[in-house]
Length: 456
Image (cartoon, rainbow, N blue to C red; front, side):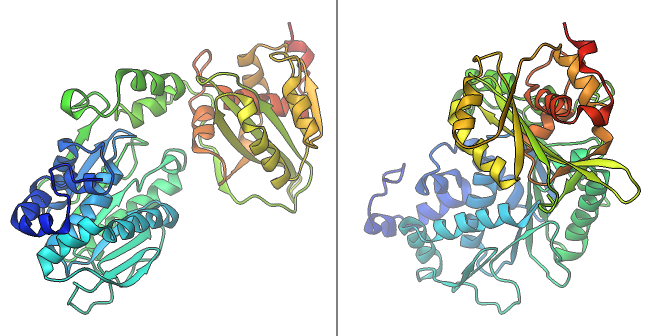
Protein backbone atom coordinates (compact mmCIF):
# COMPACT_ATOMS: atom_id res chain seq x y z
CA UNK A 1 0.00 0.00 0.00
CA UNK A 2 1.36 3.37 -0.95
CA UNK A 3 1.75 5.84 1.87
CA UNK A 4 -1.23 8.21 1.99
CA UNK A 5 1.01 11.22 1.43
CA UNK A 6 2.69 10.07 -1.79
CA UNK A 7 5.77 8.22 -0.45
CA UNK A 8 6.23 5.15 -2.63
CA UNK A 9 9.88 4.05 -2.54
CA UNK A 10 12.75 3.97 -0.07
CA UNK A 11 14.45 6.69 -2.15
CA UNK A 12 11.39 8.95 -1.91
CA UNK A 13 11.34 8.24 1.79
CA UNK A 14 15.02 9.14 2.29
CA UNK A 15 14.61 12.42 0.41
CA UNK A 16 11.85 13.44 2.75
CA UNK A 17 13.45 12.47 6.06
CA UNK A 18 12.78 15.71 7.90
CA UNK A 19 9.18 15.88 6.76
CA UNK A 20 8.60 12.22 7.57
CA UNK A 21 9.84 12.64 11.14
CA UNK A 22 7.76 15.77 11.56
CA UNK A 23 4.68 13.88 10.35
CA UNK A 24 5.43 11.03 12.77
CA UNK A 25 5.72 13.50 15.63
CA UNK A 26 2.68 15.67 14.90
CA UNK A 27 0.35 13.37 12.94
CA UNK A 28 1.06 9.89 14.28
CA UNK A 29 -2.19 8.46 12.93
CA UNK A 30 -0.40 8.49 9.54
CA UNK A 31 2.06 5.96 10.93
CA UNK A 32 -1.00 3.80 11.41
CA UNK A 33 -1.88 4.27 7.75
CA UNK A 34 1.54 2.90 6.79
CA UNK A 35 0.77 -0.17 8.90
CA UNK A 36 -2.60 -0.76 7.28
CA UNK A 37 -4.70 0.92 9.97
CA UNK A 38 -6.44 3.13 7.44
CA UNK A 39 -9.40 3.96 9.71
CA UNK A 40 -7.28 6.06 12.03
CA UNK A 41 -7.89 9.79 11.72
CA UNK A 42 -6.64 13.06 13.29
CA UNK A 43 -8.65 12.32 16.43
CA UNK A 44 -6.37 9.35 17.07
CA UNK A 45 -3.33 11.61 16.73
CA UNK A 46 -4.83 13.75 19.50
CA UNK A 47 -5.20 10.68 21.70
CA UNK A 48 -1.66 9.46 21.04
CA UNK A 49 -0.09 12.83 21.81
CA UNK A 50 -2.28 13.37 24.87
CA UNK A 51 -1.25 10.07 26.50
CA UNK A 52 2.40 9.94 25.43
CA UNK A 53 3.69 13.51 25.14
CA UNK A 54 3.67 14.36 28.83
CA UNK A 55 5.51 13.57 32.06
CA UNK A 56 2.20 13.75 33.90
CA UNK A 57 -0.30 11.00 34.67
CA UNK A 58 -3.07 11.09 32.08
CA UNK A 59 -6.15 9.05 31.28
CA UNK A 60 -8.48 8.62 28.33
CA UNK A 61 -11.85 6.91 28.19
CA UNK A 62 -13.08 6.09 24.70
CA UNK A 63 -15.93 3.92 23.49
CA UNK A 64 -15.46 0.33 22.38
CA UNK A 65 -14.57 0.02 18.73
CA UNK A 66 -12.89 3.43 18.60
CA UNK A 67 -9.42 1.97 17.81
CA UNK A 68 -7.95 3.32 21.04
CA UNK A 69 -5.73 0.24 21.53
CA UNK A 70 -4.56 0.28 17.93
CA UNK A 71 -3.76 3.98 17.97
CA UNK A 72 -2.62 4.75 21.51
CA UNK A 73 -0.87 1.50 22.35
CA UNK A 74 0.40 0.00 19.08
CA UNK A 75 1.08 3.10 16.98
CA UNK A 76 1.90 5.20 20.05
CA UNK A 77 4.59 2.75 21.19
CA UNK A 78 6.26 2.62 17.76
CA UNK A 79 6.29 6.41 17.62
CA UNK A 80 7.71 6.75 21.14
CA UNK A 81 10.59 4.36 20.37
CA UNK A 82 11.35 6.42 17.25
CA UNK A 83 12.07 9.53 19.33
CA UNK A 84 13.05 7.93 22.67
CA UNK A 85 15.13 4.86 21.72
CA UNK A 86 16.47 4.24 25.24
CA UNK A 87 13.21 4.53 27.16
CA UNK A 88 11.86 1.50 28.95
CA UNK A 89 8.15 1.14 28.16
CA UNK A 90 5.69 -0.98 30.15
CA UNK A 91 2.43 -1.92 28.46
CA UNK A 92 -0.10 -3.51 30.77
CA UNK A 93 -3.60 -4.91 30.40
CA UNK A 94 -5.83 -7.00 32.66
CA UNK A 95 -4.02 -10.25 31.84
CA UNK A 96 -0.91 -11.33 29.96
CA UNK A 97 -2.61 -12.91 26.94
CA UNK A 98 -4.18 -9.68 25.59
CA UNK A 99 -1.00 -7.68 26.22
CA UNK A 100 1.04 -10.35 24.43
CA UNK A 101 -1.18 -9.82 21.37
CA UNK A 102 -0.31 -6.11 21.50
CA UNK A 103 3.45 -6.73 21.68
CA UNK A 104 3.15 -9.10 18.71
CA UNK A 105 1.41 -6.34 16.76
CA UNK A 106 4.22 -3.91 17.65
CA UNK A 107 6.82 -6.48 16.58
CA UNK A 108 5.09 -6.88 13.20
CA UNK A 109 4.93 -3.11 12.81
CA UNK A 110 8.67 -2.76 13.40
CA UNK A 111 9.35 -5.22 10.59
CA UNK A 112 7.56 -3.21 7.90
CA UNK A 113 9.72 -1.53 5.23
CA UNK A 114 8.35 1.99 5.79
CA UNK A 115 8.85 1.87 9.56
CA UNK A 116 12.36 0.45 9.14
CA UNK A 117 13.22 3.32 6.78
CA UNK A 118 11.85 5.84 9.25
CA UNK A 119 13.99 4.44 12.09
CA UNK A 120 17.04 4.50 9.82
CA UNK A 121 16.43 8.18 9.16
CA UNK A 122 16.21 8.86 12.89
CA UNK A 123 19.07 6.62 14.09
CA UNK A 124 21.32 6.05 11.07
CA UNK A 125 20.65 2.34 10.74
CA UNK A 126 17.82 -0.10 10.35
CA UNK A 127 16.30 -1.41 13.58
CA UNK A 128 17.10 -5.02 14.40
CA UNK A 129 15.62 -6.99 17.25
CA UNK A 130 17.88 -8.36 19.98
CA UNK A 131 14.93 -9.83 21.88
CA UNK A 132 11.57 -10.52 20.22
CA UNK A 133 9.24 -12.72 22.19
CA UNK A 134 5.80 -12.41 23.72
CA UNK A 135 5.84 -9.55 26.17
CA UNK A 136 9.45 -8.50 25.60
CA UNK A 137 10.95 -6.46 22.75
CA UNK A 138 14.49 -5.03 22.62
CA UNK A 139 16.08 -3.38 19.57
CA UNK A 140 19.62 -2.52 18.57
CA UNK A 141 18.95 1.23 18.73
CA UNK A 142 18.69 0.92 22.52
CA UNK A 143 22.18 1.78 23.77
CA UNK A 144 21.56 1.90 27.53
CA UNK A 145 22.16 -1.39 29.31
CA UNK A 146 19.16 -2.05 31.56
CA UNK A 147 17.32 -5.12 32.76
CA UNK A 148 14.20 -3.89 30.98
CA UNK A 149 14.08 -3.82 27.19
CA UNK A 150 12.39 -1.27 24.94
CA UNK A 151 8.94 -2.76 25.48
CA UNK A 152 7.75 -5.01 28.28
CA UNK A 153 4.21 -6.36 28.25
CA UNK A 154 2.67 -7.63 31.48
CA UNK A 155 -0.75 -8.43 32.81
CA UNK A 156 -1.67 -6.26 35.74
CA UNK A 157 -1.94 -9.41 37.82
CA UNK A 158 1.71 -10.37 37.24
CA UNK A 159 4.47 -9.67 39.73
CA UNK A 160 6.37 -6.51 38.70
CA UNK A 161 8.43 -5.80 41.82
CA UNK A 162 12.01 -4.87 40.93
CA UNK A 163 11.21 -3.41 37.52
CA UNK A 164 11.41 0.28 36.65
CA UNK A 165 10.15 2.10 33.57
CA UNK A 166 10.31 5.49 31.91
CA UNK A 167 6.79 5.19 30.52
CA UNK A 168 3.77 3.10 31.57
CA UNK A 169 0.64 2.75 29.45
CA UNK A 170 -2.27 0.75 30.87
CA UNK A 171 -5.01 -0.27 28.44
CA UNK A 172 -8.25 -1.96 29.52
CA UNK A 173 -6.80 -2.85 32.92
CA UNK A 174 -10.40 -2.82 34.20
CA UNK A 175 -12.87 -5.32 32.76
CA UNK A 176 -16.12 -7.09 33.61
CA UNK A 177 -14.32 -8.72 36.54
CA UNK A 178 -14.03 -5.31 38.19
CA UNK A 179 -17.75 -4.82 37.88
CA UNK A 180 -18.75 -8.11 39.46
CA UNK A 181 -16.04 -8.67 42.07
CA UNK A 182 -15.17 -6.35 44.93
CA UNK A 183 -11.98 -8.33 45.55
CA UNK A 184 -10.96 -7.81 41.91
CA UNK A 185 -11.62 -4.08 42.17
CA UNK A 186 -9.46 -3.82 45.28
CA UNK A 187 -6.67 -5.80 43.61
CA UNK A 188 -6.77 -3.54 40.54
CA UNK A 189 -6.67 -0.42 42.72
CA UNK A 190 -3.60 -1.76 44.52
CA UNK A 191 -1.72 -2.77 41.35
CA UNK A 192 -2.38 0.52 39.53
CA UNK A 193 -1.28 2.50 42.58
CA UNK A 194 1.93 0.42 42.73
CA UNK A 195 2.65 1.02 39.04
CA UNK A 196 2.14 4.78 39.20
CA UNK A 197 4.08 5.35 42.42
CA UNK A 198 6.87 2.76 42.67
CA UNK A 199 7.39 1.19 39.24
CA UNK A 200 7.46 4.37 37.14
CA UNK A 201 10.71 6.35 37.49
CA UNK A 202 10.39 9.59 39.49
CA UNK A 203 9.25 12.50 37.37
CA UNK A 204 7.85 10.28 34.62
CA UNK A 205 4.22 9.87 33.63
CA UNK A 206 1.75 7.08 33.03
CA UNK A 207 -1.19 6.84 30.64
CA UNK A 208 -4.45 4.90 31.09
CA UNK A 209 -7.11 4.06 28.53
CA UNK A 210 -10.35 2.08 28.69
CA UNK A 211 -13.99 2.34 29.73
CA UNK A 212 -15.69 2.54 33.13
CA UNK A 213 -17.12 -0.59 34.75
CA UNK A 214 -18.14 0.25 38.32
CA UNK A 215 -18.54 3.36 40.45
CA UNK A 216 -15.75 2.13 42.74
CA UNK A 217 -13.39 0.79 40.08
CA UNK A 218 -9.77 1.88 39.65
CA UNK A 219 -10.60 5.01 37.66
CA UNK A 220 -11.18 6.43 41.13
CA UNK A 221 -7.54 5.72 42.01
CA UNK A 222 -6.24 7.11 38.71
CA UNK A 223 -7.95 10.45 39.40
CA UNK A 224 -5.91 10.91 42.60
CA UNK A 225 -2.39 10.14 41.33
CA UNK A 226 -1.01 13.67 41.57
CA UNK A 227 -0.76 15.32 45.00
CA UNK A 228 -1.16 18.76 43.41
CA UNK A 229 -3.90 18.28 40.84
CA UNK A 230 -6.13 15.37 39.99
CA UNK A 231 -5.30 13.27 36.96
CA UNK A 232 -7.60 14.49 34.17
CA UNK A 233 -9.71 11.90 32.37
CA UNK A 234 -10.43 12.91 28.79
CA UNK A 235 -13.71 11.29 27.69
CA UNK A 236 -14.84 10.46 24.17
CA UNK A 237 -18.21 8.74 24.16
CA UNK A 238 -19.88 7.37 21.06
CA UNK A 239 -21.29 10.82 20.19
CA UNK A 240 -18.31 13.11 20.86
CA UNK A 241 -16.25 13.80 17.74
CA UNK A 242 -17.89 10.80 16.10
CA UNK A 243 -19.11 12.78 13.12
CA UNK A 244 -17.82 14.39 9.96
CA UNK A 245 -14.12 13.83 9.34
CA UNK A 246 -13.73 12.02 12.67
CA UNK A 247 -16.57 9.54 12.21
CA UNK A 248 -15.73 6.07 13.51
CA UNK A 249 -19.16 4.45 13.96
CA UNK A 250 -22.06 5.20 11.65
CA UNK A 251 -25.51 5.96 13.05
CA UNK A 252 -26.67 2.50 11.99
CA UNK A 253 -23.69 0.88 13.72
CA UNK A 254 -24.55 2.76 16.92
CA UNK A 255 -28.18 1.64 16.70
CA UNK A 256 -27.03 -1.94 16.16
CA UNK A 257 -24.75 -1.78 19.23
CA UNK A 258 -27.65 -0.47 21.30
CA UNK A 259 -30.01 -3.20 20.07
CA UNK A 260 -27.59 -6.04 20.80
CA UNK A 261 -25.96 -4.83 24.04
CA UNK A 262 -27.46 -4.74 27.52
CA UNK A 263 -28.43 -1.22 28.66
CA UNK A 264 -25.84 -1.15 31.47
CA UNK A 265 -23.05 -2.35 29.18
CA UNK A 266 -24.05 0.03 26.38
CA UNK A 267 -24.04 2.97 28.78
CA UNK A 268 -20.64 2.00 30.21
CA UNK A 269 -18.87 0.99 27.01
CA UNK A 270 -20.33 3.50 24.54
CA UNK A 271 -21.72 6.44 26.52
CA UNK A 272 -19.04 6.10 29.25
CA UNK A 273 -21.71 6.41 31.92
CA UNK A 274 -22.55 3.95 34.68
CA UNK A 275 -26.10 2.79 35.28
CA UNK A 276 -27.51 1.93 38.68
CA UNK A 277 -28.00 -1.65 39.82
CA UNK A 278 -30.67 -1.16 42.50
CA UNK A 279 -33.47 -2.79 40.51
CA UNK A 280 -31.46 -5.71 39.15
CA UNK A 281 -32.14 -9.30 40.25
CA UNK A 282 -28.64 -10.70 39.86
CA UNK A 283 -25.70 -9.15 41.69
CA UNK A 284 -22.44 -10.34 43.26
CA UNK A 285 -21.93 -13.54 41.25
CA UNK A 286 -19.49 -16.13 42.53
CA UNK A 287 -16.78 -15.69 39.90
CA UNK A 288 -14.35 -16.88 38.71
CA UNK A 289 -13.67 -20.54 39.32
CA UNK A 290 -11.77 -23.11 37.30
CA UNK A 291 -13.96 -25.79 35.79
CA UNK A 292 -13.47 -29.09 37.61
CA UNK A 293 -13.53 -31.77 34.91
CA UNK A 294 -13.58 -34.51 37.55
CA UNK A 295 -17.17 -33.51 38.39
CA UNK A 296 -19.60 -35.52 36.28
CA UNK A 297 -23.26 -34.99 35.51
CA UNK A 298 -23.03 -31.76 33.51
CA UNK A 299 -26.20 -30.76 31.67
CA UNK A 300 -26.78 -28.02 29.13
CA UNK A 301 -29.48 -25.84 27.61
CA UNK A 302 -29.36 -24.11 24.23
CA UNK A 303 -31.50 -21.03 23.68
CA UNK A 304 -31.74 -20.77 19.90
CA UNK A 305 -31.82 -17.60 17.82
CA UNK A 306 -32.63 -17.02 14.16
CA UNK A 307 -31.63 -13.40 13.37
CA UNK A 308 -28.78 -10.97 13.95
CA UNK A 309 -30.41 -8.99 16.76
CA UNK A 310 -30.61 -11.99 19.08
CA UNK A 311 -28.10 -14.38 20.57
CA UNK A 312 -27.94 -18.11 20.83
CA UNK A 313 -27.14 -18.81 24.47
CA UNK A 314 -25.58 -22.01 25.79
CA UNK A 315 -25.57 -22.70 29.53
CA UNK A 316 -23.78 -25.69 31.06
CA UNK A 317 -23.91 -26.64 34.74
CA UNK A 318 -22.85 -29.54 36.93
CA UNK A 319 -24.03 -30.17 40.52
CA UNK A 320 -21.45 -30.39 43.31
CA UNK A 321 -22.17 -31.63 46.82
CA UNK A 322 -19.84 -29.90 49.27
CA UNK A 323 -18.51 -31.53 52.43
CA UNK A 324 -21.03 -29.67 54.58
CA UNK A 325 -23.86 -31.07 52.46
CA UNK A 326 -24.49 -27.80 50.60
CA UNK A 327 -25.58 -28.24 46.99
CA UNK A 328 -23.79 -25.85 44.62
CA UNK A 329 -23.20 -25.75 40.86
CA UNK A 330 -20.26 -25.01 38.66
CA UNK A 331 -21.52 -23.30 35.54
CA UNK A 332 -20.26 -21.82 32.30
CA UNK A 333 -22.10 -19.79 29.66
CA UNK A 334 -21.60 -18.72 26.06
CA UNK A 335 -23.48 -16.48 23.63
CA UNK A 336 -23.31 -16.43 19.83
CA UNK A 337 -24.90 -13.63 17.77
CA UNK A 338 -27.05 -14.72 14.88
CA UNK A 339 -28.63 -17.86 13.46
CA UNK A 340 -28.28 -21.09 15.42
CA UNK A 341 -27.19 -23.10 12.36
CA UNK A 342 -23.96 -21.11 12.21
CA UNK A 343 -22.96 -22.26 15.69
CA UNK A 344 -24.08 -25.88 15.97
CA UNK A 345 -20.54 -27.20 15.47
CA UNK A 346 -19.34 -24.85 18.25
CA UNK A 347 -22.15 -26.05 20.54
CA UNK A 348 -21.18 -29.67 19.87
CA UNK A 349 -17.52 -28.95 20.65
CA UNK A 350 -18.36 -27.21 23.92
CA UNK A 351 -20.72 -29.98 25.01
CA UNK A 352 -17.98 -32.54 24.45
CA UNK A 353 -15.37 -30.38 26.19
CA UNK A 354 -17.50 -30.08 29.34
CA UNK A 355 -18.68 -33.72 29.16
CA UNK A 356 -22.35 -32.79 28.89
CA UNK A 357 -24.70 -35.68 29.65
CA UNK A 358 -27.72 -34.14 27.98
CA UNK A 359 -28.67 -30.88 26.28
CA UNK A 360 -32.16 -29.39 26.55
CA UNK A 361 -33.43 -27.58 23.45
CA UNK A 362 -36.76 -25.76 23.08
CA UNK A 363 -38.76 -27.02 20.10
CA UNK A 364 -41.37 -24.25 19.77
CA UNK A 365 -39.61 -21.91 17.34
CA UNK A 366 -38.51 -24.39 14.66
CA UNK A 367 -40.56 -27.51 15.45
CA UNK A 368 -37.52 -29.17 17.00
CA UNK A 369 -35.25 -29.01 13.93
CA UNK A 370 -32.29 -27.56 15.88
CA UNK A 371 -32.49 -30.40 18.37
CA UNK A 372 -32.62 -32.98 15.60
CA UNK A 373 -29.48 -31.57 13.98
CA UNK A 374 -27.62 -31.62 17.31
CA UNK A 375 -28.78 -35.20 17.89
CA UNK A 376 -27.40 -36.10 14.46
CA UNK A 377 -24.04 -34.82 15.74
CA UNK A 378 -24.16 -37.40 18.49
CA UNK A 379 -25.44 -35.29 21.39
CA UNK A 380 -28.15 -36.59 23.71
CA UNK A 381 -30.90 -34.04 23.08
CA UNK A 382 -33.93 -33.54 25.29
CA UNK A 383 -36.45 -31.38 23.41
CA UNK A 384 -39.18 -29.56 25.32
CA UNK A 385 -42.07 -27.22 24.60
CA UNK A 386 -41.86 -23.80 26.25
CA UNK A 387 -45.07 -22.68 27.94
CA UNK A 388 -43.93 -20.34 30.69
CA UNK A 389 -43.67 -16.58 30.93
CA UNK A 390 -39.98 -15.69 30.56
CA UNK A 391 -39.77 -13.39 33.58
CA UNK A 392 -41.54 -15.89 35.84
CA UNK A 393 -39.13 -18.58 34.67
CA UNK A 394 -36.02 -16.49 35.30
CA UNK A 395 -37.17 -15.17 38.68
CA UNK A 396 -38.51 -18.56 39.83
CA UNK A 397 -35.71 -20.87 38.67
CA UNK A 398 -32.53 -18.86 38.22
CA UNK A 399 -32.98 -16.34 41.03
CA UNK A 400 -33.32 -18.85 43.92
CA UNK A 401 -30.23 -20.81 42.90
CA UNK A 402 -28.12 -17.76 41.95
CA UNK A 403 -26.10 -17.61 45.25
CA UNK A 404 -25.14 -21.27 44.78
CA UNK A 405 -23.74 -20.99 41.25
CA UNK A 406 -19.96 -20.66 40.79
CA UNK A 407 -19.24 -19.32 37.31
CA UNK A 408 -16.27 -20.58 35.33
CA UNK A 409 -13.59 -18.16 34.20
CA UNK A 410 -14.35 -19.39 30.65
CA UNK A 411 -17.79 -17.78 30.67
CA UNK A 412 -18.28 -15.21 27.91
CA UNK A 413 -18.29 -11.65 29.23
CA UNK A 414 -21.35 -10.85 27.12
CA UNK A 415 -23.17 -13.85 28.62
CA UNK A 416 -22.52 -12.76 32.20
CA UNK A 417 -23.35 -9.15 31.35
CA UNK A 418 -26.76 -10.19 30.03
CA UNK A 419 -27.49 -12.02 33.28
CA UNK A 420 -26.28 -9.18 35.51
CA UNK A 421 -28.23 -6.58 33.51
CA UNK A 422 -31.46 -8.58 33.32
CA UNK A 423 -34.70 -6.62 33.68
CA UNK A 424 -38.15 -7.78 32.64
CA UNK A 425 -38.85 -6.87 29.03
CA UNK A 426 -35.36 -5.49 28.31
CA UNK A 427 -33.29 -7.22 25.63
CA UNK A 428 -30.92 -8.90 25.08
CA UNK A 429 -31.97 -11.46 27.71
CA UNK A 430 -31.02 -14.71 25.99
CA UNK A 431 -28.40 -15.71 28.60
CA UNK A 432 -30.66 -15.49 31.69
CA UNK A 433 -33.43 -17.15 29.67
CA UNK A 434 -31.10 -20.06 28.90
CA UNK A 435 -29.91 -20.34 32.51
CA UNK A 436 -33.47 -20.24 33.87
CA UNK A 437 -34.53 -22.92 31.39
CA UNK A 438 -31.58 -25.13 32.31
CA UNK A 439 -32.31 -25.11 36.04
CA UNK A 440 -36.00 -25.66 35.44
CA UNK A 441 -35.55 -28.53 32.98
CA UNK A 442 -32.41 -30.24 34.30
CA UNK A 443 -32.36 -29.62 38.06
CA UNK A 444 -35.98 -29.00 39.19
CA UNK A 445 -35.82 -31.37 42.16
CA UNK A 446 -33.05 -29.34 43.81
CA UNK A 447 -35.06 -26.13 43.74
CA UNK A 448 -38.24 -27.77 44.96
CA UNK A 449 -40.38 -25.66 42.62
CA UNK A 450 -43.33 -27.12 40.74
CA UNK A 451 -43.03 -25.71 37.23
CA UNK A 452 -46.63 -26.65 36.42
CA UNK A 453 -47.79 -23.89 38.75
CA UNK A 454 -46.38 -21.28 36.42
CA UNK A 455 -47.46 -22.65 33.06
CA UNK A 456 -50.26 -21.11 31.06
